[in-house]
Image: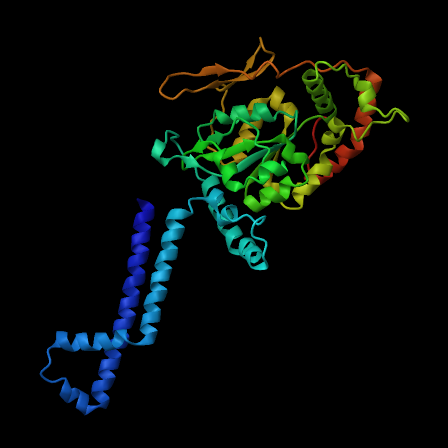
Length: 404
């Protein structure tokens, strides 16, 4: 209703101003004709005012400049109508509808980097910073929107736990599955509308989210996400790189049940006994290499770096920090997040609409799996290896973690 009222006022104002200006020009012409030519003045005698006005209006319409003015006014009205009713938020900005993978001309590039980027930034900030007090949106007001925030990684850093916690927030609409859209060429080739169709349905004041940890190490993902929406909020979870390597190995070993894997042989090179930096879990834990690609396109203030270790030990504090970064209303309390002694890690209580109280919910059995036992000398070797890389990361983000 507000949009329709604003549109009506804008259109009425444009039409009224146009009519007043043209009428003023018309009256000025009539006055000049009468004053300059007595013959015209005599010809007008005895003619009723409505008829006289009609004659002059007909002559006025035949003026070429008048017809052009009317056409311009109609075009302005159509543009206003299109902007008010077809561009709902930043997630459907023109930059999303017309991805630069398809439109590669210089004209389109200039158009996208100019007007469209400013539009997406304004609408994103308006929506993300907007606070709500009631999340019970009518179904007719819900729709699918491109994400306003993405959890980009890191793998085995706590991304699943963070997403499940955030999904309990009434202002968050998040997909359960990892999309892998921006990191997979085949999926990306399906287009932005395919990606949009995979998003969760959300209300007008909810923020749409997805998480795909592979985005963090992908060389293509930063630029592709930036093309979709340069104002999107990014959430990155980092944990002790050595613990992350062990957790990654444990998951890989579990997925390959028919293969007996030796952690020491994988993490160290056979010839020199140095840390095998090409081993994928080690490569992923070298955080500064991957973060540098993101900082080339996104300012650091647009990337929230959560502490994955503290998310395990003190999840409430980390969740409140993410909550604040996303511009969400305060929701996470001791009633929502609690420690489950049986499972050995924190769980959550979800509030079910229409019911009093909370429903307990914990992550699956795969969470909290045991890490492989590692000899002290090997762990020391890994910690020594990551020490230099960690220092580069800390200087890059202006922050240190306890695992340093």
